[in-house]
Amino acid sequence: MPSRRTLLAAAEVAAWWVPLAALWLVLVNTVDLLEAAVGAGASVVVALVARGARRAVTGR
Amino acid sequence: MTEALIVTALLLVAGSATAAVAVRDPVRQSLVLAVLGVVLAVLFTVLQAPDVALSQLAVGSALTPLLLLLTVRKVRRRGQRAAGGGGGSDGRRGGGSGP
Amino acid sequence: MNGWILAAVVVLAAGVGATLWGVVTGPLRRRAAAQNLSTALACPALLLLAQGYARPAYVDLALVLAVLGPVGTLVFARLLADELADDPPHARGPTLTAAALGAAVVLAVSLATGPGRALVKVLVVGALLVGGNLVASRALAGGMQEARRD
Image (cartoon, rainbow over all chains, first blue to last red; front, side, top):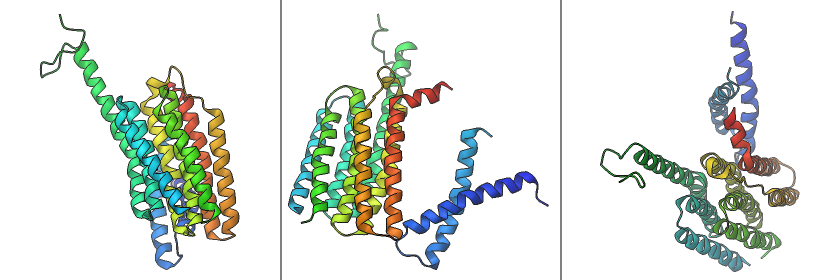
């Protein structure tokens, strides 16, 4: 069973991922399956980066 | 109307490019260069080349001033160190510390 | 050809021309403030051009400029902090004018766009433009020194 910290980290990455994926879907020209898949992958990467940046700024 | 737009963008580019040459201080020159990058991007857009304008924006608005300012800062630090520490490894003397 | 292009000509000639004059002459703080305003005024001009040419793809240019313009200003605010610490550039009036112009242009373009995903895109550009402009001018006016003192 994952610990509480792991669950919190996963929740934060998911919370970053939702608006980022929504932003991708808004900004692309045509919405199809390939665009959605690429956007989901890119949003995962950027969500991890955003969590790292947030931790670096707040110092925790 | 399109001609007026092209003429306006060309005048802005010509003015900022002339200013970038005429300004002598590198720090102020980098400010003028940032404006020149943005104006050039507008000119490319007006001439229906948005792809060129995109790359010009990416390079000209943030990257070129960053490189210039970092270079200026490094040169100044080296000059200060040479003046305070009695010359660098190449034997160059800083101003004011010589006999 | 149409009113959008005419408005773009006016914004470019009056707004960007004035910031070009400001960045060429005067003390360093005025030049830094004028450089910030030049990106904040060129971005509405690009939006107007995209609408005037009836090419929604050109909105990408305004989006990139709305992201990268404040980044460039933050570069100047960080690396010129020592030079600007003595008399920080307080350009409240011109900054608010540029922000109001950007908001008005975004409003007009979004009204002309109509509902849909393109409208959301224009609104994202507008939020980035106005917010980034205000944040960048605040950093230029001394927020960077406060952050460094911590």
